[in-house]
Image 1 (cartoon, helix red, strand yellow):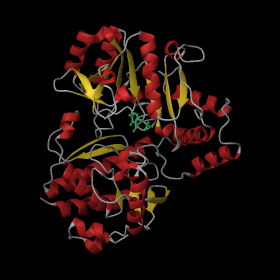
Image 2 (cartoon, helix red, strand yellow; image 1 turned 90 degrees about the vertical axis):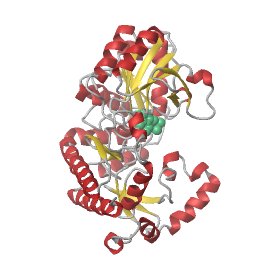
Image 3 (cartoon, rainbow, N blue to C red; image 1 turned 90 degrees about the horizontal axis):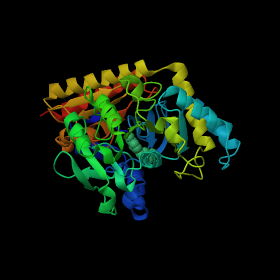
Image 4 (cartoon, rainbow, N blue to C red; image 1 turned 180 degrees about the horizontal axis):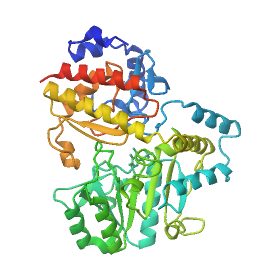
Length: 447
Ligand code: PMP
């Protein structure tokens, strides 16, 4: 890694060139021949910010080291999954011990009961839960249950919220507040998208009016209680309450997608903080300690519709995988015992303040949205309350900021529309180094 001070004051391109990326570049070239975009999930390709993604060799605590030996303080943390940082010893030991006993059985294990109990205890609206392999799977399954329960087809989602890549969930609204959706990806029949209603996040009036019009046809309303997939956007006062009230009025199933927020803002869901209980909850990421997992759960009468006791079919060869479950239990145990949330929040506040102050000094327009240990610096001078607001950001400036930070050894999310995550492994020293990098980055970007 080139010492940031050695290149201080010079243009970003020079700095980026000075960061050794030879081996990553070589791998990226090979990867692009073999895998679409050279990656197994699109945002990893750095398409939104340009440049070569460092290929990661290993991680420890708050750091990742790439194949060229560059070390980064990591604020992606496997997209929020690694709340304890990389290779936390208790998680590693639990996973090792599990794999030594056998990596998969396709038969029930005691650990699944333990994790299910931990989830039900931590998220009181979950009375019964089913483990799956990803957030996408969990959302698909929860919606299937909601459709079976209500015997209705339509689903409301909010623009800018991401719920995985199931066909009908990859939709955005057309023009107008409440309009039938068009597919957001090639390969999705319009018929699928036509069962979705996409509404602006935080717009209580648009939601109430859509419910007046379609309420009796709507099976489920799904929402990220704190949006993390358009960058961090907090629910406006009364928004979640309005969702609860209206869904109750029309007999629709309210689903909170807590794949990001589950165990991120407190031990449990964001619903514990906002005190709004959905009918169903979707979890993922943190509950697998960095291994593939997802979970959906909710009221018993809904979950009892799931096979084998009910008619909603849903299954998985590796569901409840012993290694993922062991890592999840270990992660939740550490969180429960150490209750790190206040400390995480404090570190997040220091970073948010540093971003705002550095941007102000540099006369760069910036709004920082943050809650708990998730935050997004939006390059705009107006508040970001929904996806339209987020789209007003200067994404080129974000890309510049991203590379200024990366070249100083700080790995921020490679897109304006993603959350940065802080883990319990981020030390005071990491935060201090990050604040220095922020100050230097904005100084270099001074308008
Ligand atoms: N829901 C939310 C809120 C998410 O953030 C994500 C993934 N980032 C998903 C669902 C999909 O999860 P997965 O990538 O595990 O399929």
